[in-house]
Length: 123
Image (cartoon, rainbow, N blue to C red; front, side):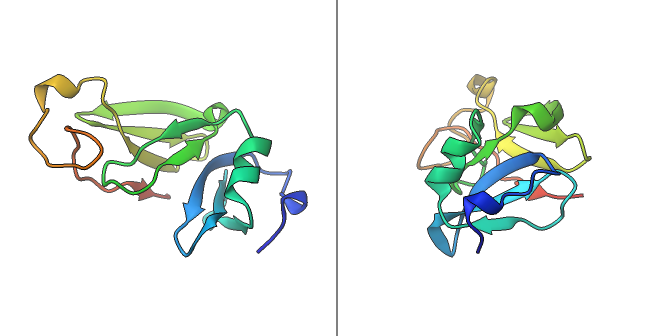
């Protein structure tokens, strides 16, 4: 696990997730890198790398914080939006902007509309 002072500067950040094995730590996904880096403090990383856009996954896992500057485009499909990054990788997130036509079809703790789909795929 690295400290924040050892963050790579050659690659822009794609997004940050909490580390499931250590909730106070962060997993940082960098543009062009297939595997994440791990850092000791999620709170410190999100403060230091701000501004980041918070997104929610469709399967009720904790969300992510995305660097908007590296999102090439967004493809909407039902209750999900696929964020396409500059390196061709993508992240699928929940989108409630058109929720009224599918509300209450699925039972979720946090929201009344969701669609179970793959949430993360790095190409």
